[in-house]
Amino acid sequence: MKKAYVFPGQGAQFTGMGKELYETLPLAKELFEQANEILGFRITDLMFEGSDEELKQTKVTQPAIFLHSVILARSLGETFQPDMTAGHSLGEFSALVAAGALSFEDGLKLVYARALAMQKACEANPSTMAAILGLPDERVEEVCASVDDVVVPANYNCPGQIVISGSNSGIEKACELMKEAGAKRALPLKVGGAFHSPLMEPARLELMAAIEATPFATPICPVYQNVSTVGETDPAVIKNNLIAQLTSPVKWTQSVQQMIADGAVEFVELGPGSVLQGLITKIDKGVTVSGKQ
Image 1 (tube, rainbow, N blue to C red):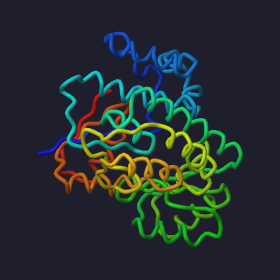
Image 2: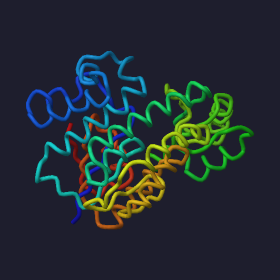
Image 3: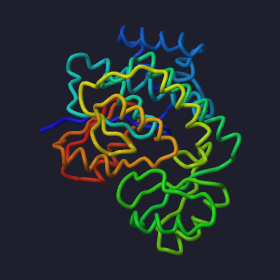
C-alpha cells in the first residue's frame, strides 16, 4: 500500500498560482521570497498577477511550476512521507527536491539554468512539437523513424497519447503521416521548441556543467526518473539521468506502470493543474488519484 507523490511539468501554469500559499503560510512566504532573491527578479509578481503571455516564457514557467510544487510539498510538513516520487520532465527536479536529493536553493538554480539553456536552444534552432492521439506507441515510433528529418517521440504521456518533437518541417510531415496511419488527431503544439529531442543538445551540454557542479544527496525514497523509468536512489545515477533527460523521451507511461508494479496504489499530484491525475487514470484505472494545488 504505497503512496507516490508526482509533480507536473511545463504547461500546468496559471495566473494566481501559489498566491494562497504565500498569503496563508509563513514558511511558503519565506521560500517564495528566498526564490525572488536567488532569481534576481520577483517571480512571485508574475505568478500571482502575470499575464498568460508572461507566464508562458520558459524562463518564467519552469521556475514558477517548480516553486509551486516544492513549496506545496514543504507545506505538508511531517505528513509528507512519500514511498516514491516522480515528475514529468521539469517536474523531475521538483520530485528530487521533495525527496531530499537536492536542496531547495540548488534545485531552483538548476531549474532556472535549464530554462535559460532551453530558451537559448529554441531561439538558435526554431523547432516544435505535436500531440499524436489514438495510435499505438510502436506505430508512432515507426512513423517518426520513416521521416527523413529530426522527429522523435518526446513524451509517452499515456496509452494512445504521445507527443513528438523535431524540426518544423519534420513535424509537419510526421503529422500528415500519422493521420494517414490512423491517428485520431495530430495537433501541433504552441511550444518554444523541440524539447526532449536531439535539437536540445546545446542545452544539455550547458545544463550538464551546472548539474555536475551541484551536490546531490541520497533521497529519502526512490525517485522514478523519466529516462530510466525505475526508482533511483544513487546520486551518481540520478545526475546522469537528469543530464540525459533534455534530449531523451519522457517515459511517463512506463514510469507510472513501474511504480504500480512496485506497489504504488495511491498517487498524489502536487503542483498547479491536474494533468498528471488525468494521465495516471488513463494508464491504470485501479489506483487512487488526487491532487493539491
